[in-house]
Amino acid sequence: MGLGKDYAQQQCSIARALEVVGERWTLLVVRDAFYGIRRYKDFLVHLGIPRAVLASRLQSLEQAGVLEKQRYQQSPPRDEYVLTEAGIALWPTLLSLGKWASGHLEGVDTPRSFLHVACGSELGAYGQCPACGDVVPAGDVLLTPRAGLDPDPENPVSRALLTPHRLLTPLEIDHTSVRVQQ
Amino acid sequence: MGLGKDYAQQQCSIARALEVVGERWTLLVVRDAFYGIRRYKDFLVHLGIPRAVLASRLQSLEQAGVLEKQRYQQSPPRDEYVLTEAGIALWPTLLSLGKWASGHLEGVDTPRSFLHVACGSELGAYGQCPACGDVVPAGDVLLTPRAGLDPDPENPVSRALLTPHRLLTPLEIDHTSVRVQQ
DNA sequence: CCGCCTGAGTTCATTCATTGAACCTGTCGT
DNA sequence: ACGACAGGTTCAATGAATGAACTCAGGCGG
Image: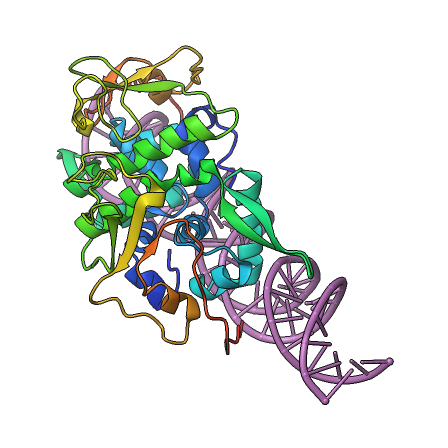
């Protein structure tokens, strides 16, 4: 991002965080990684992001240690992008952003719930489970669509997200008859 | 920001949040507002942001209901920008961003601590006080400089932030002999 | 009353980033 | 041999950010 070489900024950890995840599209890529999206094409289809920008964001997230490339087939060689431990640690940030928008912006409905997979209760603002009281790790969060979610039926990734789904587990996507027109 | 008219994005609360606070500089303006900065000139001096960009960000934050203009003198008429309740609700997001950078990025030291003003203990990742156990509201957080913080002595806002300071309370800034050269 | 100062912007040319479309590359199935 | 496919790169056009200069209204000192 390059906020300049100013002292105040380089020293502030919030500014440093924003240099890594503050660019346009970056946090949406990370969100999708939590949702179980792992492949270039699936990010492309789900986000509607220009190919060059996606390639650039995946590369900088990898360099920052947020995502990691993992080979999922040898030939042709294909990699998928998986959240590292540092990437998974962004979960509270993403959750609090989402909770903020649902609670404080006009006209934002909440088309998905984040539930504690063990007990089914909806997470609080800090990611804690109101029933158990504990902070729920991202892998134990169940992403569940709610009434009002209106996905693009042409979009196989949106369709796959209609099924309740644990964060971080790979999404099963039906790629038959999909053209990426971009 | 305008991420396009895609359904998946418009419906996702994280994407909606990013449309409001996801642009370059925006979250740093909000951070400074938590630090007690309220005036155009002080944001300018502290952030080193271009004037036009600052004016545009302050305006969109006001429109989004994150900041509110308050008149602090009648003549000449001067306003300051103060966080609304919705703006204050961004505190968990900012804190988790900062904690993430300190904990998971290379070479990020933590030049400031966030302490619970009542007991002096340092906040955890979710803004909770490890001693009291409760989540500390932003107004009860004491921002404290730590060893290694190396402010620009020419910058009166950086200087003012050397004193431990409660979030959200206006910063007292010595404006004598400051030139804004930009 | 005059000229200068201050805070809070606006204007504008230059530079930089994003966009969308087209193209490229290695491999596979047929 | 041929097309499809995943995962990119290239490139022209557009839009946003930058930094410097300018504006404007209201004090203030002399």
